[in-house]
Amino acid sequence: MTPPDTPLFLKALAGETTPRPPVWFMRQAGRYLPEYRALRATTPGFIEFCLDPEKAAEATLQPMRRFGFDAAIVFADILLIPRALGQEVWFEAGEGPRLGALPPVEAMREKTAGAGEALREVGQTLSIVRRELEPERALIGFAGAPWTVATYMLDGEARTIGKGERAQARTYAYAEPERVDAVLEVLVEATAQYLKMQADAGAQALKIFESWAEGLPDDLFERLVLRPHQALVRRVRELGVTVPLIGFPRGSAALAERYATACDVQAVALDTACPLEVGKRVQAIKPIQGALDPLLLRAGGPLLDRRVDQLMEAWGQGPWVFNLGHGILPDVPIAHVEQVLKRIGAQ
Ligand code: CP3
Image (cartoon, rainbow, N blue to C red):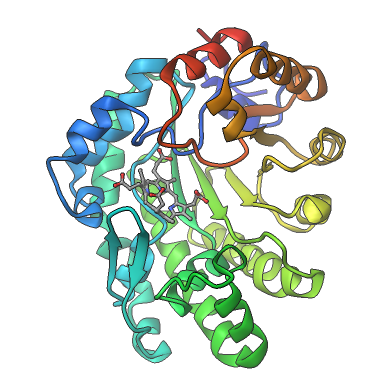
């Protein structure tokens, strides 16, 4: 058992059943909050905003003040890692990320050891937030998983054809396996260094976002998702990091039990499409996190209450962290977030 003053969120990650599930929302800092929009308007470039520790700390804390979530997630982005490896990254307003040419693998490999140091601003953000946050709230650090980050790095133009399937990156994975595997290896090392820096700076849990585990055939899931996650966890532990790790292989419910068993993360985050039954089976293996549909949160109404009740009924015996199955959308009414918190008994 964890000590009695352990934050609820960390109790659940330690496998304990909690009186109510701890709650936080994926992408809880962001455009659905008027205070975020006002703060964000003070720095035009998104990357520059992420690397301004005072502003990023303020963005992290905004949803905490408003809703009192059980955990804060550091305001940053998964696409800071390519930047630390020498690839240009920028955001086109209304269109999303754009990346410059992929640097040679050798040049990126030389930068892996310094990836934490290259993103020290994120560590400064974490330190500021930890200082400001009440002790009963936990602080989460994060990184993109190697494959998800690689899909952006390999397909910098974010082509519209098959975008949701990461078609270009997946084609490379078949057509140029050595190149893709080398990029993944570089990302494992850089990401491990980056996560260690975040733990040293005050992150009490670390989440690995594999947003593009979706739709992979099982042999590619094994090669692009499972093995790099295993290598990343091993490397993070080798570097002396002891905080719990949450893996989020989004869109892979059919392989979620395999992932939970084969990957040494402490908890598995489930996505919107994961059936309650599958969640229960994963929960028998390790703590789970998830998985309210962000579109139901947007819709609100009696169906929202009903689904929260269903989730509570299915997973409420724990260990479970209440969350969305994917990121909150920019037009979600704040009242709907409050509705969920009330229904869970967290507000
Ligand atoms: O509150 C939080 O969750 C912390 C911050 C956070 C952001 N991005 C801030 C952000 C986190 C955890 C992320 C993760 C992230 N970034 C993922 C994985 C999670 C997921 O949604 O699957 C991915 C794939 C990215 C890459 C990324 N960043 C994209 C594709 C986009 C554009 C789409 C969009 O939502 O606009 C971003 C931009 C981004 N990252 C914004 C925020 C708040 C919006 C940009 C802005 O505010 O100007």
